[in-house]
Image (cartoon, rainbow, N blue to C red; front, side, top):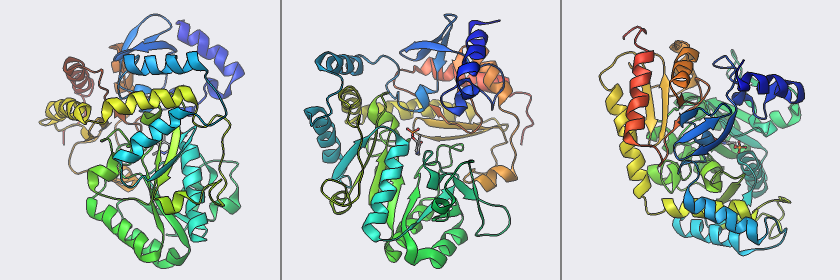
Length: 425
Ligand SMILES: *Cc1c(COP(=O)(O)O)cnc(C)c1O
């Protein structure tokens, strides 16, 4: 028995499924999750002392890799000065100014502790701003685990929805309207039917939580247009894409100015941080300047603020994004001539879908129409080879600035070798 087997058996006795977030349990790939003791640069190390090239990057935050010197120094500096204050402090001001100066549609920003909290708060602001109740969301996007977002389209009736979890408040769910991604008719119908009641539409502009599903620009533009026409706010959930696909996130990449935007992951440099921000007219509604209540004991924690600032400071001039794009292009090149698996990529986000690359996958319907070969064997072959991909067919991979070209090439070669038996399309 490996040390991880032993630790997992013990964990299952004291925590649900032995984990503190479901995907860590390896349910989607089988086997026992590896217990990691730490990370350095591009690597994670497990309890048996084995190193893995880390393509998980902590599910996104570690765009600079593990142990980045400036981030470490900033965090340690904050710890030595005092790691929690519960007062106003200069560190969140520095981070807020750094961001608002560089992202024009973020005129004002509030820091919270997770992406879920950021989304929950942004939705409240939208309801407060419009006096309306309904929120439009899209199947194929993830917005954290606040009740109103844990809902998806039901089969059958166009309007039917089903809860994505037990234990939800059904009164809350009735306020959520759901449309499929990449479905123009569903988008038009949602506004036609509910337009006057929709407080906001929330979308991942680069959906990256059920695979990576880049959308047609015209589709996102139509969404923005319909929001404006019906007086609904447009919320970009950039918890995963913010500071990841570019400093200004997907909004900057595609040329949008959302009314509200949510951040998480990269913005905390690997510490627990979320944020929501946007146009002043909306953010001024937030307490104490306005009537929309939102608070947090540990919000804008100094360690997280200093680590976050040290992270975004290294990203602001854009050169790291250029380097990450180059690394990503090596993946494109490695998969360009094969006909067995689909690689979808936006900057440093990548996703392998194990079907022949015949057409882009943009929605859950596209995936249902073209079911993939099992992901588990590929995952475990790479794990044995010392490479850690996200432990689910539907989680994306993350390149970091700590990865070398050789590591990316080796991963691509390993994926190709491990999938050589799949049918060619
Ligand atoms: C990760 C994620 C969230 C949830 O953030 P947590 O910090 O896990 O609560 C919300 N939205 C998107 C787009 C995400 O990728």
